Image (cartoon, rainbow, N blue to C red; front, side, top):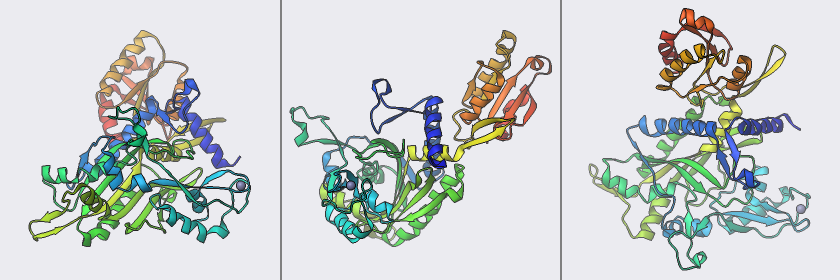
Length: 460
Ligand SMILES: [Zn+2]
């Protein structure tokens, strides 16, 4: 087994053991390509989403938030092109009859096929690269024509006819369509002027055929998307700015720059002006973490046409009317979570023992502090709980009294808690506690009355 495959196994195991990620419906044998986030996973997710929202909405004067419904009128998905075109291209090996995703086969030889390309477009690229392609299973080079399989998940919401499959309602395949159909509402209700953005975090659903690599590709997932509406002449200027900002976001989460790279889309869908992915160096290779796309005026034009509504912007000062172009930034919560876990995972030799430690950025750590009374005796539990309740007003703090202090330190290391406070019998005399730093394992004695100031400095 390669070292990287090994690392992935260790992370999957830690996620389960320590309450970050559980397989869905596990007591019934599990549900493929769906995962549940456990008590620590949901904290890490929330911290990632909070960091994104702060950067994208609260830190800015030109971006507002939105929470649109998962369900929309099916017409939205017809206008966006998803009903006819949002699909995975499949081919079958004529020799061994295994089925493969054409875009993944192409990706393996360095050719990119956009998910919104139609069957003919993908077939053309497939044919052009046929000499480089072979069946991933049996190495044969004989394939059936490319066939597209639609990714939209269907439902019977609001349909009581008994045969809803004829007129299905879709679970959204991406969150950004909710932004496009609310563009006019935001324009009319808020004092926004182009350039401005609308940001949204929410669930999306795709009927993925091959769902693999743990939480990297799942059928239900959460997106963090922002659509930035700009004057057509300024599109590329703002595109470059957002590219820079979005890369910095991951560095600010503690990801090393050498584990991040740009990947340019070579074969663009016809309406896209430019598209880059931010890729992370996962244990299973460089894969997309976020897409930053210059989408032109395609989305608003499509919705204007299909809804018969005017979705133009009127610039009062210049007396100019136009359909804004869109710069999109599209990230996944679970992909970010997996990237920060891979980045944070460390094994260190300590006194002949292996210490597993998640060196998470403090702002992402599920617990910022753990309070550990040295003994279960009431005389220590009481002052320890007092410290816990005081700090809990400001931070998410864990309280652990089981097992030896050494084992409790290891457990907190494994879940990435930056600081442990040990309350011992000396604490009763000197009114001080031992604070241990996760990364350096250095311990220092801090007066209980100084703890708030101490952590304000350390965790700011
Ligand atoms: Zn084959």
